[in-house]
Image (cartoon, rainbow, N blue to C red; front, side, top):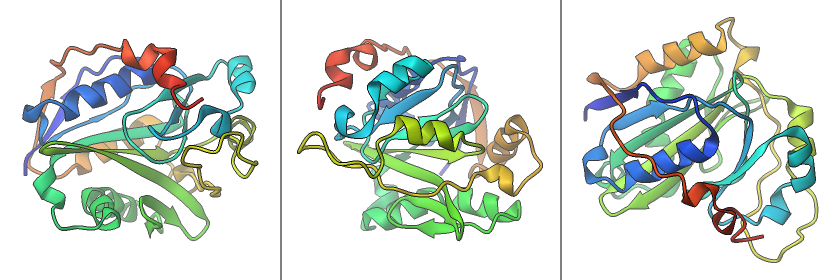
Length: 239
């Protein structure tokens, strides 16, 4: 299958990128598209079925100027920082993962990424259902959204991370406040910069070159309506 790399991605916030992700997975012509987020602000990005109160210290996020956004896919909360996080969105035909378990579908769509990390000398492997890790901790986590004939997979890779900030913002390991909602797992991060001298920008360029071939490029042409992802009714729908 071809890979079409979207270029000219605006330097924007997580709400914009989440809106683009949903626009892509609902467009039947998006099969094969991939792009890398160009994040303008730090953000906590909740899974679709998570409770804000269970997962996030909202006051701490406000003090630190960290956005709170709910994405369309499942999974746990991602702490994203400009210059430290790398988020890769891929859209594939649902037939690509037909017959695979959820665990195997995550690995199948991220096989190229694991190979790219191994080629850098990172001792990485697939872990749990949807992670890439080393023996020292978690490097990346992925989430999916399936709509009709397409599957969206976005993967958040920690190039670097402010672990103290993450622990202050995400209520990992703390008692649940609400009875509903998927909880984020407590996992020790092991960022990529522990294994490479490449800069954040150079790492993005390297990963772009490793996307599955044949690779073509085209500028972003989708209209992105961020209304839903800036609406507190969506963000706090599981308060």
